[in-house]
Length: 266
Image (cartoon, rainbow, N blue to C red):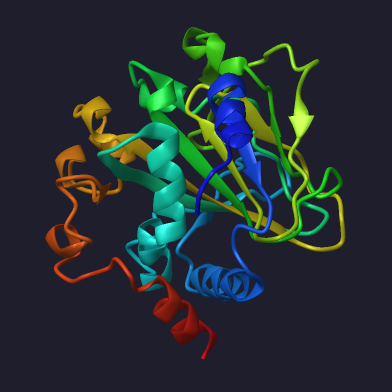
């Protein structure tokens, strides 16, 4: 997939890019079916520790799902990420946040780089996939365009309403909601402030997020964010060190996305 000049300019200037219909209906259907299987098998937890709301996090995904393990190697994903942050790059983390109907809790304002501590937040990008139609009413993602031009790391504190998340209180007067249909994707660099809101509708809403980082910006002391034993073991998705998954998983993962979609749906 090729990005237009205007799309690249928006990402580099504003720190984010929305691409509608990035994944088709079959691909979204497979991801939803796999997500519900992971929930049924209790591969996640509610990160909210107070009240009766639920923000159900599944992390990591690759340890439990061949489908989600294959997604970063999908050629369409690689084409875009390679342009946005350059190569070589690794898949740093992956996760799903599932918000049930009526009681789905939001995730407070934060920047991803306040977790990761990368020296240049523009060398990492999140890829947030709407697994259901995402709207203001069901608590979609909000972002602050251009927010990556400021360093908010020192302003973050532990979010005491959750078991491990952090948050801060930015000036959100310029915040914009990301309303996309299921299959739409938001790419945003690690420095962009973002949050999600509560789901007050009668249907569930979920978002799946991957984080990709330029290999030469890895903080090898931050191994606890990776889901692997150490940052050295993170899968190289694109660049000279990439083996298509052979080194990291012992089998070829690249090129299997379409097959894994069919397997899940069957």
